[in-house]
Amino acid sequence: MIDLTKYLESRQYETVKFVFLKAVHDLFQGHIAEIQNSLNNGSYAEIYHLEKREIKILTEDELKSLNEKMREIIREDIPIKLVTDDVDELKRKAESMERSDIKHILENCGWARLKEYALGDYMDYFYLDPETSTGKIIDFEIYKYNRGLILKTPLEVFDWKIAPYKNTPKIAKAFHERDRWEKIMGINYVGSINEKVFENKIIEQIMLNETFHDRKIAEIATEILANKKIRIVTIAGPSSSGKTTLSKKMELQLKTGGVETLAISLDNYYIGRANVPLDENGEKDFETIEALDLELLNKNLEDLISGQETELPIYNFYTGEREEKTQKAQLSKDGIIIIEGIHGLNDRLTSHIPRENKYKIYISCLTQTNMDMHNRIHTTDVRKIRRIVRDSLSRKTSGEHTLSMWNSIRRGEEKWIFPFQEEADAIFNSSFTYELGVLKPYALKELIKVRVTSDQYDEAKKLASLLSCFVDIDPSFIPVDSIMKEFIGGSVFYNY
Image: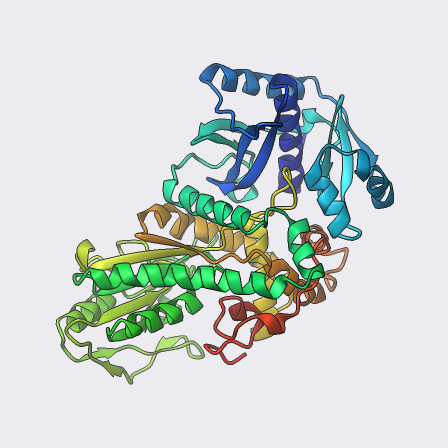
């Protein structure tokens, strides 16, 4: 029996993915699946005709056949065999490869840790190892979504069960917009990013990313300014999504539009360390919305919107208590309050304020650039790497410690952020096509410190392997007001 407490979800995912790709190969001749991005705690994939590049939208009968074929492969417990992990051998075979995306990886990613595996008569390429046979799969789920499919496997954060279904059309649209933009820019996979570095075109790529971000921020600001009823803008997103920089840049955009802004930090509304409720493990739950003084927050917001001078609280993180002194604040008739924090999308946070007076922004790093057609870069892995770099530089926290906290962080996100993301009025994708090349040297300094005896060693090794496929990118190319500077330091908005 599988020990689920120690089972690596990456192996589970890689094995189910291999079975899916083989089933597509066996059932739909002349077609290939492309695994594009994370969605609904799974992977979104589309099936294409190899020559025409037309998307094949499965009928219900075809989906049923695909599901049955996958389960048949699992029941047969077919061995999964390593063909080669010798990069030199793969490079020699590159000329005869049908997969141009793999050829591009081998040409532009140096000694990428690419491995060729066989499942029966079907072969494919991996960066992370699958299990030794298909019978080791615990469970999977596959269903139609838009023009493609979503493939789901058990996750540790859901106690090794498949995450429940939730429709996320706004998130799907944000991924689609990014995918379309990257294809126009000629950036689909890691090899194309490295190629930009080799050709000395990465600065242009960086500036295109920044312009894309700035244009989106300006579009959101324009929408806010056009609606005179909006008095509060909330910005929320998961860990390491870039919330703070976005709030600063949004302030500047609104001020440029002639509107006074007032930023309010939710940190100042903590009810005090001694009063914070306990979680299911009996530990202080600082992420719960119950840890905030919601009545005081809403009273302050109502007073500010009505034009009254208001005394805002000041929280002292050293003492764990609210200070006796307060900060006086007043807002002009048409002024806008900006609130940044994990609960910004939850209406309970601002329950006294009518919905028409609020504008909600969801920000996340929705990674679209992948390794190749069948190996995606997980959004949560990019956020982990961002967090490791930021915490090591700004808080002197080890990468090992950051990794040890991640499961708890993810559980908090699943409880307090992701259920509300579709309630956002706008979604801002803070990802950069080039970012792992910038983050790589900072992250590796922390990852290589993780000892083989550590519980975090396998995860550190996995992230280091991912980063090894990227060419280093000079961080001096990054503008000082970029969201990327929130993680590597040197931002005009921060002191590190």
